[in-house]
Length: 110
Length: 111
Image 1 (tube, rainbow over the protein chains, first blue to last red):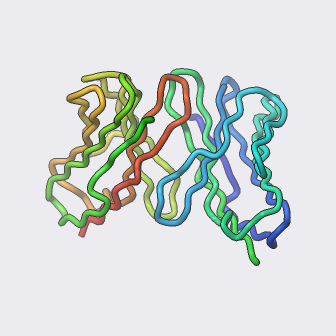
Image 2 (cartoon, chains in turn orange, blue):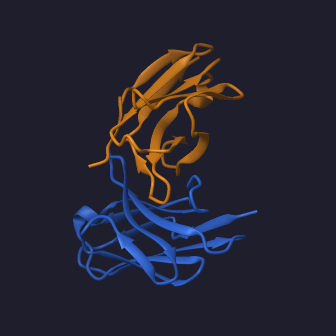
């Protein structure tokens, strides 16, 4: 069974610090990797996608993918209290539905 | 631009009552459509997905069903709700092989 694993947290960081969120997946042929942010009581919103090994940067967010280790991570630089949310890792192969991890709760204290 | 509409936002239903949740997408044609459920303290569980009118794939056997009567309309139904059906129901759409975009969700409480 295809699985996506995340540490549930909570991960607590002070304002201005780097938050590091990690995700592992079981299906070696996975091709697409996504990070979603979900505020309490709201629906998930896409913040990053990555398809090839290495780093992808978008503003304060950097996604890192290592297919050999079946590992994907999200770094949030200069963390803000507004970044406090649950971060969901999602993985799929071409033509299949996304499989989501249970999410990591991030708390940024001011 | 594409938008997704999902309603109602909240719903309280007694055990054994029927359910109908509706989702529509605007600004695109032939989208892939999905229903997910998020129970308290649990991850997103894929319930159904559809790649076209009348084409429904079920991921989890249960008392729920889905239909796609029109290209951009996706409906989640149940004839008799169970307590375990409570949760946050999310409709999502995507172009082929692209990320999902979620609606605002329906919070269902079965009493």
